[in-house]
Amino acid sequence: MAFMRKKNRVSGEIPTSSMADIAFLLLIFFLVTTVFDEEKGLSIVLPEPQETVEVSQKNVLHLIVRADGIVEVKRGESPSVQPVRPQEIETIWRVEVGQNPNLIAAVKTYPDAPYRNMIAVLDQLHKAGADRISLQIME
Amino acid sequence: MIQGGLKRKSKANSEIPSSSLADMAFLLLIFFMVSTTFPKEKPRRLPFPEAEATKKIDEPRKNILHVWLEKDGSVYINDVRVPMSDISGIVAPIYDQTDRKLVVSLRADRDVPYQFVDAVTKELQEAHAVRVTFHTNLEQRVTRERR
Image 1 (cartoon, one colour):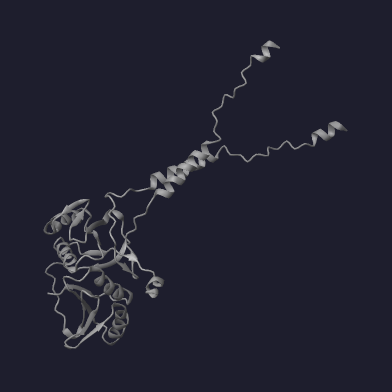
Image 2: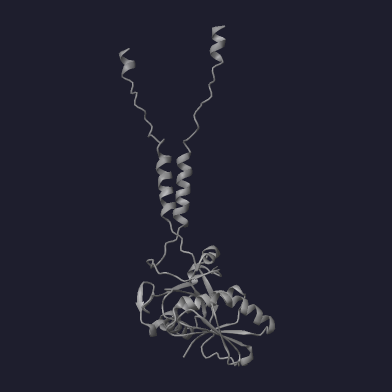
């Protein structure tokens, strides 16, 4: 009987029951702390340097972006200026490009105008599917 | 009779086998650790403009260069402040390294005066980096209508 009592009753195995908890805790920690930096925006291709293309004035729709956010629409050679809100440009572009498929949008921004006003116009042009866009600064 | 009754007792283990749970969890953990890429530069919290036509850039991350433009007109490339006139000199070698596939993501403050944006795009043109994306946040139509 004394011989039987000497037998070691402590388990020789490493306790692994909490291992899954530890691993899942780490996993959830990394999942929560990860932030994804998304690459997104409005894409445009700038002209190569010294690449100037002569465009007939009748194929140009001037969009002059003012500092107060109002956009002045000027059609080609016509001296008349139509002040509009940026939200209206999508419709204007669709109407104009329907009449002249070769139309080019010339976005001219005043130097002191905030960047977001120009983006608002560019956004409308992208929404309307315009691909011939020229970005200029008002001098 | 008593012995027969004892034999009916179920000998199947009633516990859910959890010994492989740790292996599964570590496998997931290691997968996420390996597949995570860390941004090269420290994040700058700029208020970006909003646009409804915001699209994801379909270009591998190694071909994208971030150019940060702050409200006061200061430009940062790879966490270093760069004078406006030096941009083309810095971007040109990167453009060559990326096999002329470079896309510049211009991350500008929404209130920066346009003259600085124009100066940056002129410098990028000089470096032949003509594929430019103006970084914007997606504007939700609902919030726009509410205004």
